[in-house]
Image (cartoon, rainbow, N blue to C red):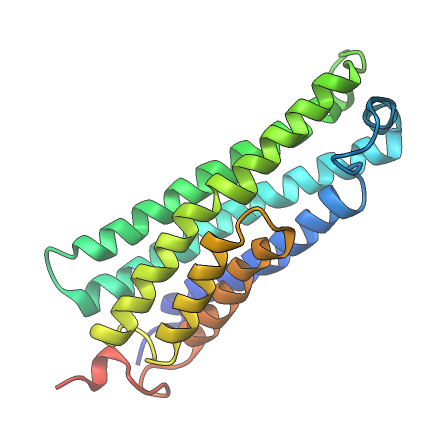
Length: 222
């Protein structure tokens, strides 16, 4: 049986799901203006104290989500590598993909909120609305396009190892491939961003289950 410490990546994954959804909701749905809104709307957004602080709160939540995701990926990599065996090239590529996403998520959150955060934490005046809009759009392109590419790779590799090496229950393979395809095909579409939390939640539940209680585990291989 694995120790309780072995289950921490599963708890980290669940923490990521909660922090990502709440942070995304706080930053995007509660505070940020529509991308097609007028320049004046973006200026008013940063000038509004309540919305500024909501945006900054969302930024911190996404930063914490990035840390939780890193812990989750490191733990997942250990399981994938144990099942794959050396030289574990696919497992290492999965780890690298997860780290790339952590960087992109952190930079995207900072880019989206750089204008309101500058006003909150420093004597920075409210920037021009056009600049605020450009920063918003740049951050969302990083998050919803470039960020989903390494995520799709991580999910696809994990799914392949679940099927080929039984690193995880076999049913996670087809499910993961579907979610990876959603990430790639529907990347610019807003709901596609939530395919990742769904996948992380499923994998985290598996990681939290005691060894031997889930079929197709590495220990069951002959």
